[in-house]
Length: 365
Image 1: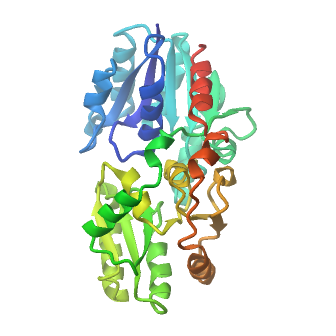
Image 2 (image 1 turned 90 degrees about the vertical axis):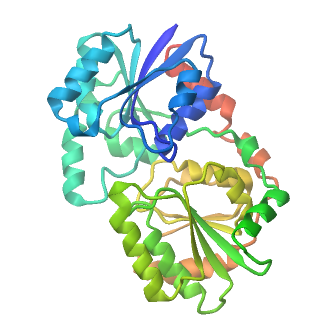
Image 3 (image 1 turned 135 degrees about the horizontal axis):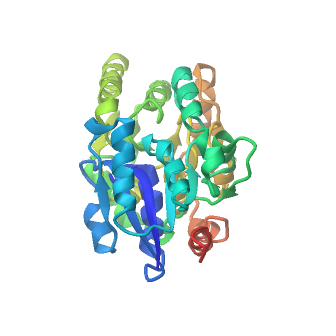
């Protein structure tokens, strides 16, 4: 059996990289390949029980011990527990400093790029670029969730593009589910519900969504913004800033925060439009899920164009000058649901069987 040590840095359910890995882990032939995880963060809601049920192990290094010495010590300790055939590093995190040690032990190293920017600030981008230089020299295989994410991390080096996989049948549109979720939040039939899904953070750019909503409700008070997700410790100040803006703009009746939800697939059916105004993303799984559901989407132009499957998916720049474009396109595109979306997804590179085969090949199967 092939044994793989996944360096995802967390096993929390709201983490996009973990969603990608778990979608594969559930479907992969575990008689041929098995995953273990080395992380620094469990998260409040996590995959620990599911991972152990599937036959994997989770090894943990507390955040307060994140010195290079402790990281190296823990890494070697885990590698000595059993024979690993591959170390699969999901960039970027502190564990990237360890992949050269795996090479010295003759363990195959896979580096996986998930983002189109090194960071959301210039200084951190420079720092992360320096820390990631070893991905160019130490990787036996380079993988990216989109062409843009691959070029950002690997520069001139060749890489394999493997899109994220979802269980698309779960995201099929349901009128029953639509009514259930809309009743839960007291939406009327006249309400135009726009969603934004993901961690509340500067990267996901909920602030921009509030600015667009503010313009929309000047024309129609029935626009609602459903913010699906929650914030972590790093995002607490950002969340407080959003709450202040909501009060400043008078949006208290138009913005609903759901907190963390474990049935996000049901929420897509309740929406009339989805916004993804992220400052940067590699391959947002949310977008693939939403396309399977058929809900119309407007995405930031910073996001890969390879996501576009349905005709009701559009891209716009995200800045103050583009607010008017987001308002105009939102009014045109709302309620333009695609009802043949599952078939559309199955015929593309996002076909789950095709993606699963590509992952198996990564591990020499």
